[in-house]
Length: 166
Ligand code: ADP
Image (cartoon, rainbow, N blue to C red; front, side):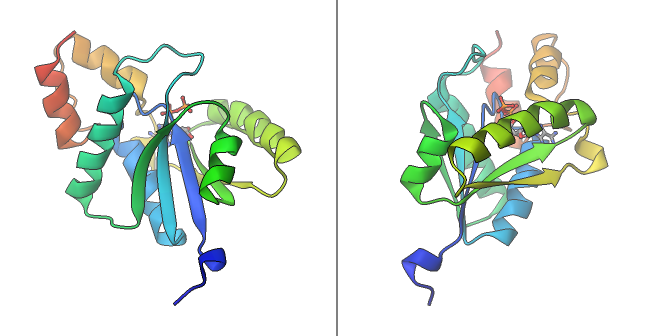
């Protein structure tokens, strides 16, 4: 048994508006690297969200059940990611990288976090090529035109988007 202090916790923060198969692939891989991963939905950032926070959280919960991973918790938070990470005792943040365009933004974010919270590191996982082009934005766009998005998002999200057509 590990001491509480030795438990390696990582926070995977994001908008998850909605969660996609790309996010879940990163989550699954992170869950095999850490004792516990907290996937944390950012409540209010500069982007206006499409789905309410509670729904984004619930859809992640259902998707995790679908895949069957058990060292993952779902939560939501306000404010700075590093403040949230400190509260949970996490020493790592997880971020996914799809393309060079993600890299520039992610490097700036990670270096800012390093400057403010040197005890918390960021671990970058590179997406699988088959998920490279998937983003929550593309899913929202396709779904708003009635397109089938089941290749890109878990079953729970497909059903949710069908029920809550905007
Ligand atoms: P944010 O608003 O913080 O960018 P997102 O929900 O868009 O939140 O993404 C959360 C994290 O997941 C980011 O690190 C992002 O790069 C990563 N991500 C998003 N889509 C994919 C994908 N298809 N494959 C791998 N990582 C992804």
